[in-house]
Image (cartoon, rainbow over all chains, first blue to last red):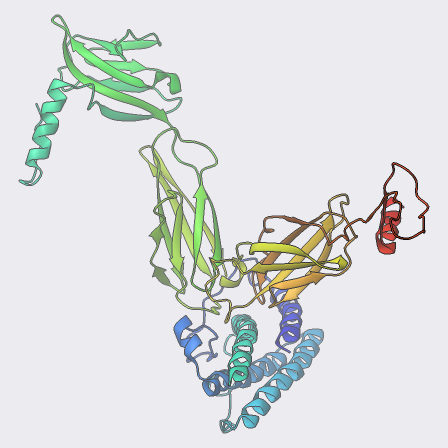
Length: 165
Length: 344
């Protein structure tokens, strides 16, 4: 699932970056990351030892939380996009993300882990809107990319640990 | 005579240096670096402007075009041929007053930098080199930044142009920025590269590739290998593999991609033909394929040819029809089939 989404995301990201235009579509461009009050994104990055030591429950919970936030973020991105083609692609991508989120939640329930209460998940400011859509859009997709890559490794680790028990 | 401000700790070293300078100045000639193509002035010690001196280079007369101006030697448009130990002698008694080791060179140009991680997720290394020689000693300074933080850089103990950095975190969305500055006496030049964690991952090739024939199977070869020993955590960061094989007599490779397995059985080998086999590795999610492993050669199992010779049965009366003085070799149906296929 993550591989399929990764592939889809790459296509969307390229389209989105050309939609944003320069300098976003330039190679190696990296805009400053908004601070956490302006845009709160779950970071896939973690210290290696911490990642290795994650318990199954925590590992799944982190993934579940991340995709909940990112799904809301991509939905908001789709809403604020003026280009119809891009909007359709982003919304289609959201159904895929939703599916992934459903699988994770399902797995957590099967393993007997409590799901976090569905809180109002919002990435943007107090009104839920993205403060700087272009820069924020860049980082939402960027972080999503990292999460999909990380999740593949998370699920592989989970698979090995669950098999061992 | 040296005059300089020195600390008490430095005193013995400086005094010894001064002694050596007096006794064997040619050993401790001060170095003067000059730009290629420029005009150079060499000053004889601290003599007055009206002093009269003569010069020698490497103990012989100066053949290159030059001019003398009091205690100074002037050379024009210098090149590498001007390199040497220049000594000046005060007239009329000819005491040696100074020795200068003239070294012609150029300022550094932007180095070429590349980085790679073959020990993911532990760390990465960067290498750099100069496209053009500067002809004079050149040092390098490296700094690495990630997410607005400077990372600790370890210089390689063996390779002068290499350094090692540990990844501060994994699955990062922030790029890394590596800046290398080349510095010598005539100037400095920098080059910087930027990359993401996932783009520089390239494992070393798989190790201990072994291909063995399988008894009673003329078309099979069993291939096994190990993950590269430099890859630190193959459990949490598994590798996938790419195997390629071809008979020696053919140019076209056959390919097989394998996930998380370090063995494979080739089932479509041509009977009796020697094969060449190689394996490459890649992280299952990110980065690029490794170089190909060392090539191994193997031939599928061949049935031992049976000899049919002329015999006369001792006990029985049967006489096998034989061709005298010849030996017939028995091939299996499959082997003959394979030969015809190849010939075609």
